[in-house]
Image (cartoon, rainbow, N blue to C red; front, side):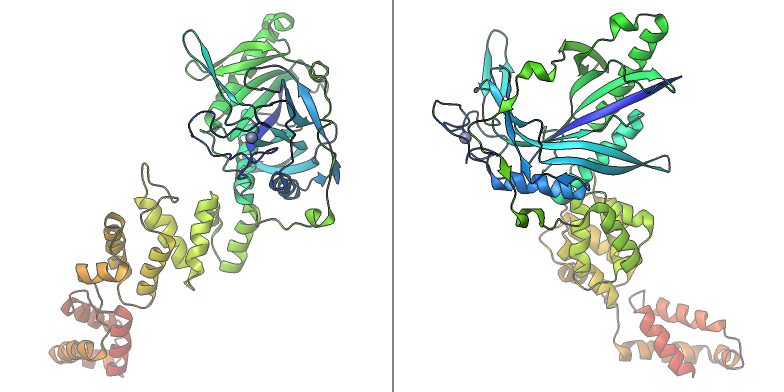
Length: 472
Ligand SMILES: [Zn+2]
């Protein structure tokens, strides 16, 4: 009887080398207050200078979601005081953001749905407050890190849709390589605006903002909890009292939300254009920037040009690292389907726990060498699995060394195979006669005998070829 209305705001930390308004490094995990300068410490007289790379990355995003890229955008001051924000205002964009009116398509339960992206704007991140028992500390390394805030239309109707949207957004951002989008480190975090309304109603009711969600699972749980809380209040007749416009925090141990503070209205921030920064006017060459291939396009290309099955293509585009690995493999002129099998099934089957495609002990070059040896018939596919398991554990050993060490080289030498074939045919003269009088099925018998005699080391293709010529 209720319809759920969800809008999401995502903060993606852009992976520029330096901060958005100064030349301090953006590196993560350094000693506190190392990457700071007069600008990001807000010392009097220090002036901001816009980082061109951050602008380019915002444009990349706009293009990827079919958005309007505003040739002119404006930086505003958003005024509020918090110890991790030394200027007492955040430089952000307000009424004229760099990106507006985009879209993104999600698929939930087999249904395609378009979700509007209202805007994406550039802003600076704040520092970090660390509260200890009787004092607080502030680390300003993060202050001034470029953020792209991406705001969706309130068009998501369930926590499943919200998660699908976020996963899609995450994937696009990774393939554009504009952010490392590492959720644990907070470089891709989400605020969810959640409200409910009676089905059929078009008006928007009171929304609650849940802050700083940084895992897909928590986002799902937080929304589900909030929807339940609001619908129960509606049914109990306590909606007016219980559901107020506010910011809530998600408690990851109890999986509930609790009130943090009343939600500020835009007017309370006293936005005004930052007099230290001129409006951003984009040159045409910026608008013509070409963006990297997106996951959906890659998937289509893998299927159409390389003949890869949809389910396999999905695995290949599951992360930027995975698709890079695959593309490094096929760049070695190998059979695409063979590459898919060795990557998706064999190598992925070995990657467990801490090991992922990013830090795989076997890189694309090495796996490519293995596939090459199988294609050439130097080893059988079965032996290939043994070789892969061996080099996976012994990273300093090359594929060819492993083949030698394990003694898995197939015999492709014609004369060695011929000797055995002669022997088998002589021993089975009666069967040869039967074969020649039309009992074709015996061919398999001869192959089996030869392979057995060769102790599995013969190249089966060679055996077939020589047998056929011998039998006429
Ligand atoms: Zn700085």
